[in-house]
Image (cartoon, rainbow, N blue to C red; front, side):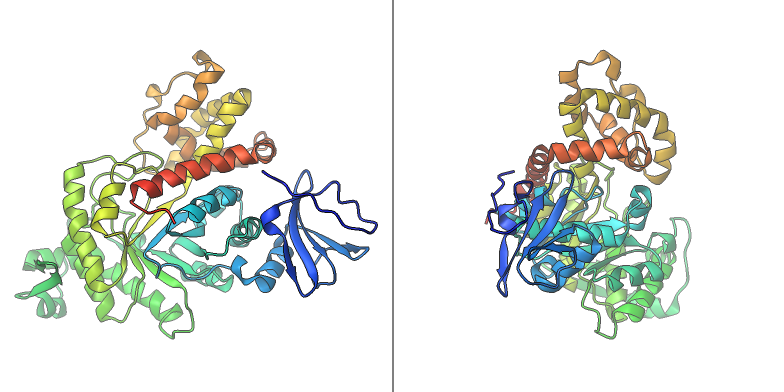
Length: 469
């Protein structure tokens, strides 16, 4: 980090403060900035202000806590999230640690896409012992520190309960991803629906670009069985929180957390029913063919994926929303297709890959600590896999006791080792042996981590075909 010295008169010793140069701003005769005070960052105001903190000799110093973040959002509006999904290209970059913001911002200063910097599910909050306040505040401080004024979103990700939606919206989150998985039935049943038969049977639906869809009676009954309750659930959430127009947050429908892929015909039915019932969505996340497992590249038939993505993208354009690709971390082989078939209009979500980059930096710079955590992850794997669908084969992971220190970072190029560390993050961070040591390490190696995140997420955007600004 290139720090900027801050010199002023008076009785406050500024030698201990290393100022982040992009954070220096003046307002109403006062100067504000963020600084590295050693063990933690602080927010400083020189001059008269209502900023919270301790004041001495006309200088107020505040820890970077919730009160300071709220002050920043009131005083400097660019530090508060805004709806961004109307922008053609948006990328969610979930930050489970609360420290990836500077690296993420470097990416979006370079590429023509907008970020959703806050993106966490309730499950992730529980596993990391954080709150949505923590998530939002971390992004606010990163945005202020880096002087990022392009705008960013905040996503209450994979929410399943009305009370969780209300919680996220009450804090100013600007996107809600509604996870409908608990209301989606598996294959094998059918539901008679005379009203649906009247609307769909014997008709051809033009989705443009020479593509049309038709329904048989059997197909329709199966689709109603699978998605009928999920559609009702989505409509109920829309009516409760969005229909009045008072809430400006973007609304995403997730139907991807299921075992069975969403066919283009099913996609059309869900979209058509939501539209018919007045629901206006910014994005939809189908369950694509193949495997979108955590932290590794796409597993499946690329040719089939391209054929189906072509139609999924057409359907999304027909209804006026964007395709959303979930578990998008490291899906490098499908990114060119996603960018091409969506014509550069998409939302892609990444999250765990930022944690993996953090752990790769540990492996590079503190091999002893990494070895300790790796062994713990192996012992904890069975407990962690209850939260995720992965096909990890632990027998394929090299024994860390046989590897030299220089060989440890290469574990992060091996799928099974990546998934081992990926899904055990909650248990690792919850263990008192590791939490404080890891955060102290990452603070000491903040520049290495920011550079790693920027390079890795930048690769995602480049393969998606996003142009540099």
